[in-house]
Length: 445
Image 1 (cartoon, helix red, strand yellow):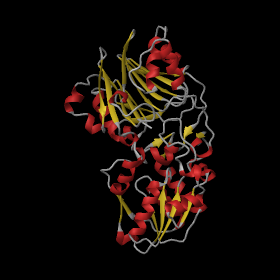
Image 2 (cartoon, helix red, strand yellow):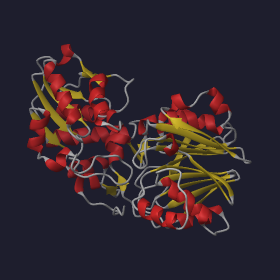
Image 3 (cartoon, one colour):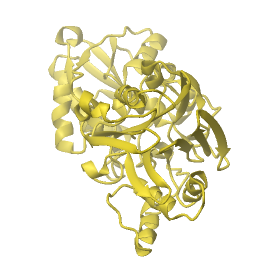
């Protein structure tokens, strides 16, 4: 889960990319980068850290031009190194190119091994670098034909933005695993992982890039090429956890769908309690829905320290454990002696939920009833989410009752798959492999 943004024919494009990435920071906190083009050459700045740590006025002033692509990194492939920060830049026979990618290629190792055997030299461990080599080695005359030829050799999840000196290309894989939206900004165009980026920079949402579609931006205009027949399997976890609640993903409001998940959860698993308490921030919208449906009062019984990053995407368990206490603090006067319905979006390893239940009881909660606004996560994701291995996922090893005992809750219940689909609507085809084990694209690595 990374974020990508691209701007074409927008004055001071890199500055807009900076603000767009700032709004997309929740999708990746390990590294950030921007490449811009002034039609003569591509300029690039990237580094480890948050957007505000990587960039300053001086660095942004070097990113001249009216086109730019940007990226925030959340490592799912590669290593935690500045070399694996994006955009990936290269010089080749047609000129210069910069690529940003959200997703995971399921045949990356297979393609990489073949390229190395043919003489390719890799500078990073990222699957995205495969694409650069495939484009550079193609004998096609035009860049868009080279991109298409490269795409025909890769599999898996990709929302890509590719910048050359005079053009920009935006592509989604035929399954549409990861989101990618198109917007208008003045006389120019914007492409971004989420629509919340459009809100910040003042762009107008136009539509989603379709699964299997490549949009070509050239001389201020755009044209669409349907490279692959769409076979939609959109990641349903975008609705549950990843996307910001003020975004529209796959054409629907994330906030409204999370509230609907909470309402369905209240119907499926009611409980006699004094208040509904969300685990902030990801559980807030579902908790509002649960409270509305159940009639139990909603209270902010846990306060989040917003100066601590999202614990789920930290690379080590030791840091995750420490940050739970740094990140979440109950309000003792609110929860003491009360029966709580605690709403969260997921239980992955179980360690965070266990600490939350322990803290709430230490602060005087009489009962803690955990309600999860998604089904149990029983399998890893191969399409751009750094979920643990199957052995590390608590729901793949323990029953609901065993998980309840482990985290120390008085009761525990998850939203059913049917309830989830009722919440988001059955009008789209979703990937739910982490819940049901049905992987649309097999892992070949």
